[in-house]
Length: 265
Image (cartoon, rainbow, N blue to C red; front, side):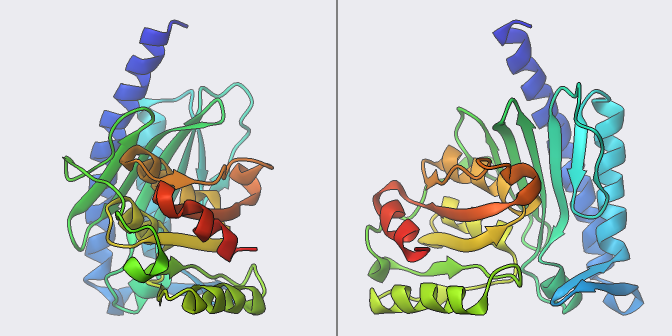
């Protein structure tokens, strides 16, 4: 396959996924406006899901499978099929921030990434409540609603707010130590309930950086592509089978990255 053809195929996927994520966002927003009618279930401690999560993912899965039948799919709600022979893989979180979503809090989003040959080629994150679409293609400029974005210019923690993620997959003591180091360095911590959206806020300069001891790939990959496309820096999330096992995540401006990474040690 030629480089030109490969690049054209990525462009086709980006265009299609942009349409799909807006459609999925509209579906999820409709559910959000009728929370009293939702069927909600627990998947574990502080880990909820609803029919909105499943139906939004099924819409995305169906649309992408129809357009690109040789691609694989990994979704938070429906899992993954055999990757052997696939052209690439779509990695999807239909609603990142389900707890805020079902609580009526507007910090949630839809996330779609496309990975090929262990590279994140496409990252799309849509916040339907704010009607903000973050987008990036590897090697290109990240945007928010079509406008170029860039990270915060700050070079130390006193310059703004740093987001610290947490899930029950890591020990409470570890996140407390991260926040302690951050506060002792003159910083302030933030948590919205959506790691994906918070990382996008790093990409556009609303937050200084983001750190979390473990994220799943469907929560992280699209936002990582957006940070990188904005000129920021992240760790190699896909290392050590991050696609299926998840990984630590550190994201921020290049000038602050080493200090962010040190918070996790």
